[in-house]
Amino acid sequence: MIILAVESSCDETAVAVVEDGRTVRADVIASQADMHATYGGVVPEIASRKHVEAIAGLAGQALAQAGVTRREIDAVAVTYAPGLIGAVLVGVNFAKSVAFALQKPLIPVHHVRGHIAANYITHPDLEPPFVCLCVSGGNTMIVDVRSYTDMEIMGATRDDAAGECFDKAARVLGIGYPGGAPMDRLAQGGDDKKYDLPRAQVHGAPLDMSFSGLKTAVVNLVHNAGQKGETLDLPGLAASFGAAVSDTLVPRTMEAAVRRGYGKVAVAGGVAANSRLRSDLERACAQRGLALYLPALPLCGDNGAMIGCQGYYEYLAGRRAGMDLNAYATRDIGLG
Ligand code: KG4
Image (cartoon, rainbow, N blue to C red; front, side, top):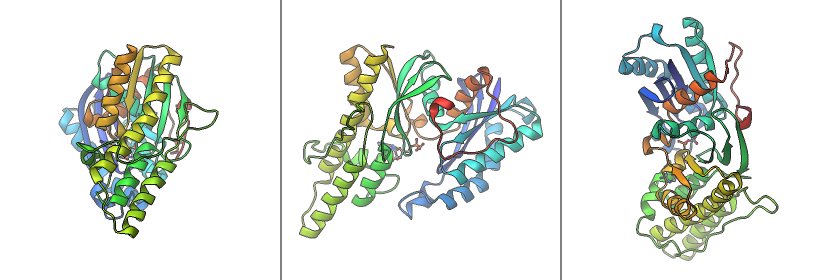
């Protein structure tokens, strides 16, 4: 079964051609990151306009790369939630028009479910159930993946997403946007105990998280140093920051894995590329005898292949959308 998959929830326009869920025939992406870097964050209106400009051309490229004609497309899958509403709407309307023109089924895909599915592409042997730590620029949650389409949030951030926190810290340090990858590089060789940064607990909700205090701590540290004319140890600060994020995410993921007892842990989303997080999870899972599944680095960030993969499993579960499909800025992953 050939699925044309469309993703436009933030600042990457992506179209993929995926066969039978796990074979990626083409995966093309147009990133707008350079455009938004000028502003230090994603400007929603610019994102929507850039998606409109890129999306049809990308679909043509994806089909050409896959060697697939329009007639050979069996279904169209699209991210319909969550994301920047104007941005998601562009993908949804494009997917609707393709499905209508070709008279093929339209499959709505939850963006974070797509991130989880990136693991099915990387690991052909992986099947649910497992516990998945989903960490991206807009979402941070621990999900019980009971089946390909039956999921429940076990814990989530109460405020900022981990990726957003990386981006804000990088912005105040002036090291670029998006900030996760430059923070990761800067942290290499830095002393992770150099700065004492907070690891917040949510009272009464041990699997929930909070990152806003960590973000504020870095902002205050930088401003105070500036006012006193002190020089910060930037590699030490980046390493201490990465340690604080990892120390928040890893123990909760382990606790969730132990509670469910599946023996398998996966990670998903842009922050899954973080080297400190990956190595801490490897160590923690090895200590507990848990199998760890990490997505291949190119599949950590937003892409169309993951939407095509999850779209296949949504299709098998009978999920279809009509021409009245809408886009949503937020939506519980459990609702699909
Ligand atoms: O999954 P993604 O591409 O977009 C969303 O769905 O939100 O994630 C983007 C986020 C950004 O916040 C980016 O800074 C972060 O992932 N990121 C990283 C790394 N690479 C990307 N964060 C930490 N370490 C990295 N190596």
